[in-house]
Image (cartoon, rainbow, N blue to C red; front, side, top):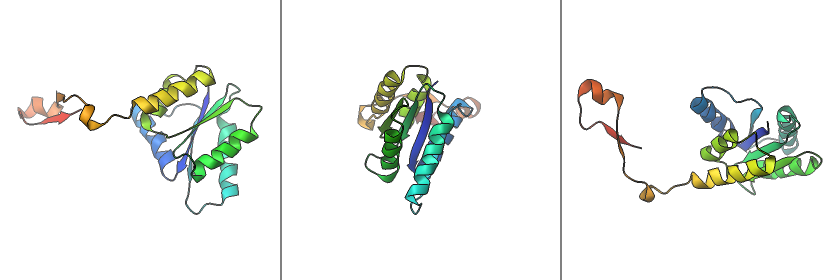
Length: 154
């Protein structure tokens, strides 16, 4: 199983992991979030990221998901990936919830396949509201109160 490190500007990494716990109902194995604080020491942050990498590495590879390409969390992740050249590791920036969910769904695949799935999941999860079909869904409260106006858009 591929290990996953989420690295982002605080509090995004932890919030993404919390989102996943909410959706799945549990904390996935070998997934760690590293929040980089605005005033954090860069060397200490890199050490924290390296420790996270080592925590999730099960010998089958590590995928690091970063929020913004070119920003400190991603730059630190690039340094960590470069320092672990002997290990199978990959870095993807542009983190979003669909990307992370897709990553967790396919993490038993080879790292190269997983990386492709993660990128596609992230891209396909971005949809403009103008291109969504209007869909009405009745909520639980409608059944109890008989309110015809209690619909929400999905």
